[in-house]
Each structure stands twice: as C-alpha cells, then as structure tokens.
Image 1 (tube, rainbow, N blue to C red):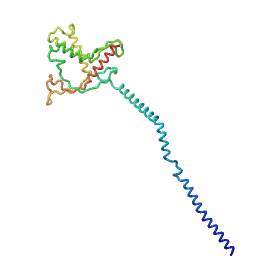
Image 2 (cartoon, helix red, strand yellow; image 1 turned 90 degrees about the vertical axis):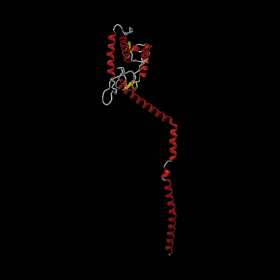
Image 3 (cartoon, rainbow, N blue to C red; image 1 turned 30 degrees about the vertical axis):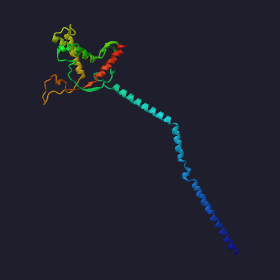
Length: 256
C-alpha cells in the first residue's frame, strides 16, 4: 500500500515537472524563432539608401563630367561624319572643279525685264549710266592673282566673264547699229563679239536650266515676245552670296 502511494507521489512529481518544463521549452523555442525572424536578420533598407545617397552626392561631379565628355565625343563623331559626307558629295553645278568653294543657297526666282540694265533702245544702251549699272554686278576686284595650283596666275571667275561678255555684246551691237565711234575692241570687234557668243553658248549648256516657261494658251504656242519671255520660275543661286564670296576671295588674294 505504501509502495503504491510512493509510486503515485513520484509519478505526480514527474508530471508536475514535465508540465513546468514544457512552457519553458516552448518559450525558448518562441524566443529562438523571434531571434531568427527574416525581418530582424535583414539589414535595414533605410541605412542602405542613405549610404547610396551619400555616395552619389560625393561623386556627383564625376558622373556629370563623364556624361558631358560622352556627349561631346558623340557630337564630334557626328560632325566628322557630316564633314566627310560633304567632302564626298558630288561637285556643285556652277562651282569650281576643285570643290573648294562654298555651297551657295538657292532660291526660286521669276526673271523680269529690267530697262535699267537693258533699255530697248540702242542709243540708250550706250549711255554711261547703263555701264555704271552693269558695273554694280561685279565684285570689287573681280579678278585676282593666285588660285588652285599656282601662286602667280592671274585669274577671273566664269560668272564675271559671262557678265562681261553679255555687256560687251550689247555694247558692240548698239555701237554698230547707231554707227557710234565708241565701239569696243574697234580693231577686231567682230571676232570679239562672236567669241563671246560661243562662250555664252557653252555657259548656257553648262548650267542646263530646265525651268518651264509657259508660252501660249489653249494648247497652242504663242509668239515669243518681250512680255512672255520671263514667265518661267528658275532655281538660282543667291547672287548676293556669290558676289560676297568673290569680293572676299579677290580681296584676300590681292593682299597676298
């Protein structure tokens, strides 16, 4: 009887110890889980962000400098390609064969009769005021010394030569028609006139102006006259630019 009681008492003590030990074990397990929680084990995000901002602020000048250098390098590469393309492009019609001159801008122009340059009267054409008007078309010092391949050759340009030829042809014609003694090239004006005709012929073919000139109505050609000779619209170089370029060239070459 005493043995049974002792056994019960011992079993009761062990049970109580087990019940007491169980909460302690569970508590230890809970504490361990809290200590190993992912939120606790990860480094704080806020501190990393602050570190990145500090680094960016400290080395910001380095990033901007590198970006600026990259942009400048890209612009230089693009400009080099553009220049290479311009140098490889076909020669401009009406330009120098060496392709060294500028590329002139063009404009659409409708020609018109101008009696200040060409009055429809031979006597008036010989008036000194007409010659003065024509001289405004030439740049100062229309010819120069020097040029491609030589430092001592006396040069002119084709555009001024053409203008000279047209004016001299008009003057010779007017002088012959009015029997004026002031005829240009009196010893050989006939050959001079015809030489200019040939020169202008080739310059016209070189330009190859294919502008459409409306003439006539209702599908019928009209008579070519002073009125309908200027109906076309032509793509022309800006002559102001041409004259400025020639003025600069002649001034520069003359000062050498």
